[in-house]
Amino acid sequence: MADRPRGSQIVGRTIVSEEHGKKYGEVEDISFVGDTGELMNLLISNTTEHIDDVKLQEDRKGRNIVPFSAVRSIGDFVIVSEGDII
Image (cartoon, rainbow, N blue to C red; front, top):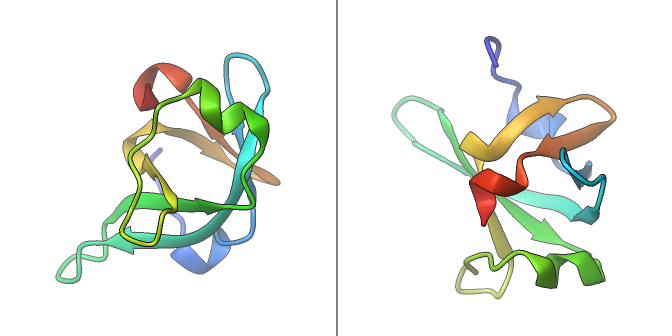
């Protein structure tokens, strides 16, 4: 992804798998590197039953974490590669 989006453009969007079109939940928040502003992780809320198919790490608040490196595209949805988050 050449142009990295602003975090505010991602929050609230639904996360969908590239391979199977499974909806995992919504982006609640992001984590980033303070010095550079580089996006590191997406924090997911309002998860669906498909979230159990992928064993994601959780933050201290129990939100699932998707590494930003798994993001393939951002439009109406945030498309992620299952292979990069499993």
